[in-house]
Image (cartoon, rainbow, N blue to C red; front, top):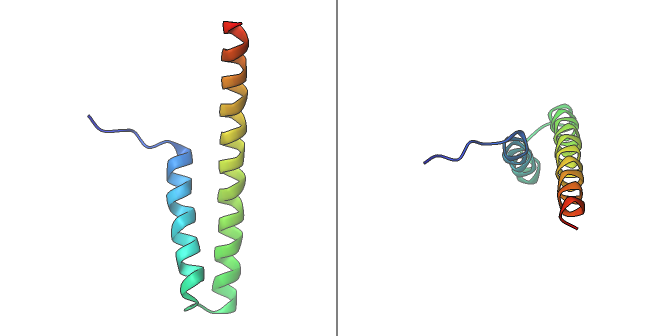
Length: 65
């Protein structure tokens, strides 16, 4: 049984890759700028997914009360 990757999982993997590239410090300033910009977009996506999940969980818990 294979676990289907969610958008969140994919974004986190991409974010980890971007962080590794930045930490290696083997890129020019313009490339780093692009990587940081990509990381910020991935962080926004992850935060939105987490907010959605939190809302869903809150609603489920309220229904149980």
